Every structure is written in C-alpha cells, then in structure tokens.
Length: 199
Length: 164
Image (cartoon, rainbow over all chains, first blue to last red; front, side, top):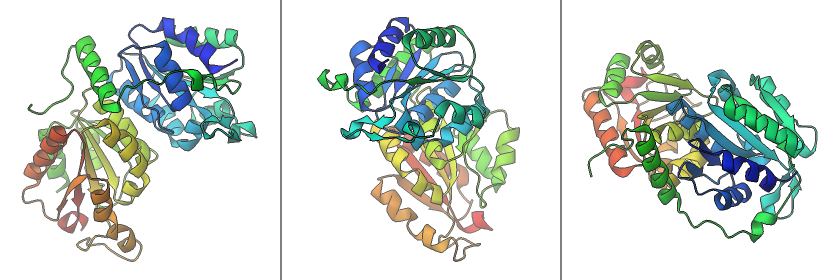
C-alpha cells in the first residue's frame, strides 16, 4: 500500500470536511488530488495534528481530517495525550507511516521501523479507537467508518515508502493565500465572521 | 489581580485559552474555569498551546495562550512555522519568571528570564512588560487590538506586582 492510493480513495469522499496536511510528500499529493477550499496545507513537521485539534475544537459540528506521518507524530507526541483527554469526536487522524524520514532523500529510518508502534502509543495515551491498517481494503473500511461515525479515530496506515510525489508539480499556494482561502470558505460555510479588526 | 486579569480577557473578547500552568499567574485558572465565557484547553507542551490555539483562531475563536516564559523557548518552532508563517492572531499571556522585577526571582529562573525579551524581538513578536495592574484592562485591549491588526501573536509579559 502506498500513500497516494489511500489519498485517491479519500479525495472523492470530501464534501464539507476540513483537511489538514502535514509535511511535503503528502501535502504535494493531496494538493494535486484536491483543490478543496477546506484544505489547510500546513506542510511542517509536528504541527498539523495540533492545528487540526484546534480546528476541531473551534468547529465541533464539523469533521476535521488530519493527514499525518510517522516522523511528524513522533516530533509532537504530546499531542496524543492532549487529544485523548479532549476526546474530539469530530476528528480523524490518518498517520501515513512509511517508517522512514523520506524527505531527507536518504530514507533514514524512524522509530517505527524499530520497536515503536504508534497505534499502541495512541492507545496508551488514551485514544480508544486507534488502529493500524496494512492494506487498501482495510484502509477504506476504517476510513468509511471514521467518516460516517462520531468518534475520535486514529488510524495508522502502514505504507511502503513512495517518492512519486517528486514527479508531481508542487502547488504554488502561499501559506497566507491558503489561510485566507480557508478562512473565507469557513466564513461562507459557517455563516460567521472569523477575523476581527478594522480594515 | 487575577480577577482583574480575567475580567480584562473577557472584556477583550477572549473566549478560548490554551494553557500549561505556571506559578506567577496561576490564580487565573480557577477563575477562567468557573467562567462560562471561556473554553479552557489544557496542553502538555507550550508547542501545542500554539498549534491548537492557531487552529482554533482560524475558526473564529479569540485565543489567548497562557504559559510560563520558558515555554516561549519550547514554542519557538510553532510560533514561527505556524503562527507567524500563517499570520494568526494570538494573545500570549506570559508569566515572566526570572525578569528583573520578578518578586520570586532566584537562580533557577534568572538565566532563563534574561533571554525572553531578545527572543521575542528575534521572533518579531511585539510585547509589553506589565509590572502593575493599574491599566490592566486597557493593556489587554491594546494587545488584542494589535494582534488583530497585525494578524500575528502579541505578548504580554507579567512581572512585578503580578509575581508576588
């Protein structure tokens, strides 16, 4: 199973859910598959899950999907304990675990290539519905259950390292442009102003 | 003083506080918790106080981040990579341990405290050091107006009378 095939299954299922991406490979792949205004293409290690938690707190009736990676989650493990205790029922975390720091281009192994099991760590932190999937059928089953259910889901997707994103043209969306696109979309769809301050 | 600080936050429209507790301003926490105007989000690291706060701010929440000044060191990365890069208005409420006017200063805090202002300057985060509560509500309103005008984090550092 590779990440791009998982994302290809997820993209057509997006309606009004918000999607936050982590770092470069998945950000590039997701941006090529989806130009939804509810995408927040964060693209830095150890930050997407926190931002997604904040979005889910702020919009409790809206589903938030966070696309994470093993290296990124390992960089912000404190998120797991915080998330477990918040128990946000509108949040889905998909961790694409390729067991390497692929962005380094020398594929240094992460801790999950060794003894570390992120789903078990999430369970230990108190996230009850934390599972690992290893094939596309299981991914699709868990993803559908998460999209249609009302529970915090933490799905670790064991994938093979793939560098196909290096052949995809990167989005030129600037972070500030992405923010305003995202916020204006929320303002329209939630029917409320978000940024304050006089113009 | 704690009640005055909480009243000031409320008056400025703050409705969500991410926090990691510290010693100098900790009396605000039970007051915040008892006031339905505020949603309190406890975190395990100041780093995620910023990311979670930023996410909430992008949904329209008016966010304050209450941390110890050493937490600024912990949250440098997320202040830069999320709050500054995306331009997110956040109010940093910071217990300024180790500052010259910290009334409980000692050798545990003094060195950490000495880098706080240069750090904020390096991060280009505007800040004000408060030593008395004489104009506290006004100081908070000023900071919140500035964070919205800049769409960036702005910090209030609490020392002096706030550290007794």
